[in-house]
Image 1 (cartoon, rainbow, N blue to C red):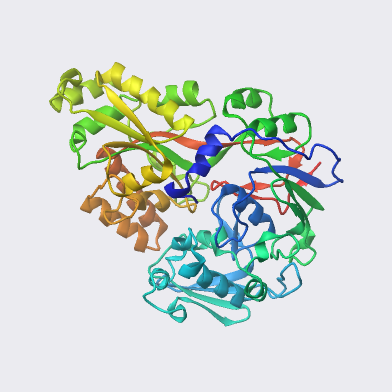
Image 2 (spheres, one colour):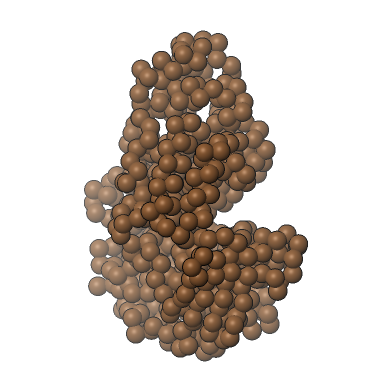
Length: 533
């Protein structure tokens, strides 16, 4: 769901946030209300422009895409009651529900979807997630100013039929259209008032809940949307969404019974909270890893890269350093994405591709590379963007490389913008990195290391890898796709392009009396059928 450009949001999940006061401790909520601390005030709640997890979780309650995601992370009908896909996988025809309405009573039409998607692609909107719509025919060219809007492959055939033409077959497209950047926007409202999404009185959505009030930097009150097509399944009368940027405050409120659910508990408190049954560690589609620049010495030597990877004790990192329920990563793709068979997990099916903490092998490989005991190895600098979490991890692996390989690694931290610029320009030897999936398919990770991918920070290029990625991208046969991606992942790890460290989890404070919610591996929560006992 988030790229490295916005991965500060993920660092906040791991570390927590700056402590701040709050002013909503009084007042008991009415029955069937859910009190949920979603995180800090979102930068925007216009789904075309938002990027944060807090924003996407709020938007998931007040909007509905063509599809939604079920508890198995599979797409199900949303605003579209059904769809057809052409045999070549290039054309999707969505049939919208004719009883779907906006919260102001306007009908939800295919024209609203066409407007939303094309305006997202319009450079004037400056959407950070415009690239999510580059799957659509001419979407990228329109964003670049090379073609006109009417050449973009999305068109309302009539009020309730939306035709979408893609650049190439995209088997996970039905999952993509559940993502918030693909939500509809009420064309009439948005064109009349460009600031429609800034205030509760003008906010219009098509989801199971609607705005009642919004006290900025404090809380949002939602109530059941009586215009929603499936309102009979909505059990909550409403909810309070608490906007707080202090994880210690969140924990205090939760333990005092002032919250039913909350994001971002303090990382150091996670083990205790788990023992007390106050927290649930949800799967989260993200991997933390270190990236080698495979074109710079000494990491242009695969044996050196493998030695550095094998000398890391990941299990020690997740249990002793992080203590947040993370899983040691011995591959690239995390748990939580489907494989071929229903209920089958891609990571479980693929298994591990590297060994953890094999010091003897690491020392052997470094010696074979010409650097016995680390002697003669060129100076090595590990680059990371400034944060306490990244610093703690960097110091941990620095100590492991010194102890296990006899190598002195210098640490260098940079502010986010400078750091990202250096990664984009391959101006590093060894760097901290991470990726959080944009959709629930292994391709969101596998495609990163194609030779021409803009996020290929290591500068890796392997024709065999590229061919497997092309096969997985163009085939509509899931068996063929998954086999190609498993094989590509194995090549990547055999070439030791990265040092996987851990798979993210999402520790969430949840009261035992909250039922019926769905949380996806992308971190999005659906509260349509949630209730409080």
